Image (cartoon, helix red, strand yellow):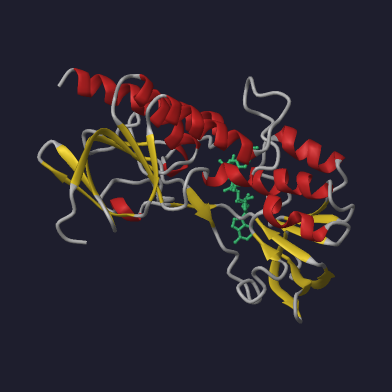
Length: 308
Ligand code: NAP
């Protein structure tokens, strides 16, 4: 870990999801030397999208993996370097940032955090025990295992409703359990989900996931009446929101939900340190807004470096 040789870049991006790769592409095309680091390699959350159907200009829909592979190729074609490595620390020394991974150290004039968010657990008995045995957080990955089986989806946002639509293509028995009587998702997504025959269970929460070798049922409680019922199911897909990945930048100002605050240039309270995509505090988290964040951050960083 000690005596690491330091490689210098104009712009380092942490996170190779759609915000990070878009930022890398714009920065590299603008003439900056660019490095992207991601612990899991390129892709991010978009890899879990079965059909990316709302990105303007991408029609008919493509799957998330195909889209991200193209995005990586495009960023690399403009000269960005994408490396799979876990960033251990970030420090600002003088006018530049020092980024350390286990095997290398990098210096950057500007740095962009595009670390995204990960799924939030439901935190009920049975969730951990049955993870991978019927409990899942990724419909694209695990949905095909439950073709023509009973499926329960938990949540009421865009993720839950979009994934319920996808799961309804695999099974005619998909229920969605939401804690309120109104979904949070975009209306078009709700309409499509209900038209696909997904059965809503409103005002209800999952209290426990039960089974033997694998999931067999969920205990559902009506939050208004307190009544509990047992619903048989083969799978429980949980989409109850996201947790921003901000461990590397504890000191940065964040909103009450923990997302990083930036100005309209995507710049954080630290000059030259940008945040883009789902890790940033903003009203609308979409591929299109993540890509836009990344492009703006790269543009401002390029101007900063050119005028330095
Ligand atoms: P989200 O919008 O935060 O929705 C989380 C859902 O889970 C909410 O309906 C919430 O209920 C429910 N929930 C939270 N904690 C719960 C608990 N402990 N028990 C039961 N239910 C719980 O999260 P998301 O759906 O993952 O979306 C994240 C972001 O990505 C959003 O900005 C979304 O618009 C975006 N996104 C967009 C698309 C698309 O455009 N196709 C697809 C996926 C995600 P309440 O409603 O009562 O709070």
